[in-house]
Length: 153
Image 1 (cartoon, rainbow, N blue to C red):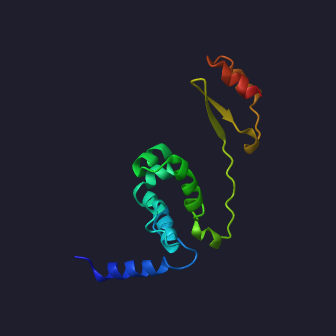
Image 2 (cartoon, one colour; image 1 turned 45 degrees about the vertical axis):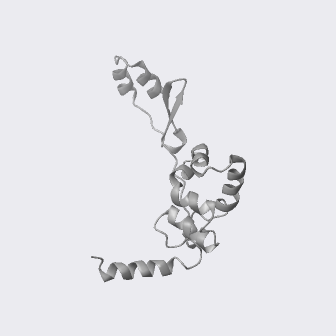
Image 3 (cartoon, rainbow, N blue to C red; image 1 turned 120 degrees about the vertical axis):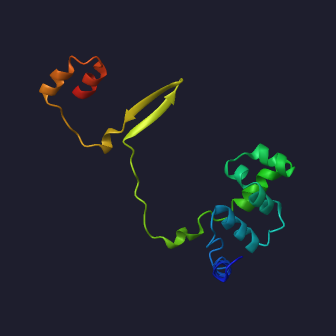
């Protein structure tokens, strides 16, 4: 049994989703894009079908898989995606936020090259420090010489 509060909430949400900018009030990105396509009168289009039924392939850029599902020539599919979906607003409520999001500098960089991982320290974001020579002498007997070279820098 569906209670009347749920029905009322759904009706209110549907009303909010008609407000400007198009796509506002959507529960997720897929629904936002579908609302925008509906407002443009494209609910019977291939673009709408792709967003509705093949959204996962679309957002993961699996174009060959998408092309097979919709059975549409890739030469026509790419321009269609660019024109019809590229013009949609992926964050319609963003225009209401005046807050700037600060950049967060990482402390470490993990790199994978030639089947080897390396870790690099992003030194400009860290405070400088020095180790006492007493502690450095304690490290001299340690089997990991890399600790000593890193500590002396």
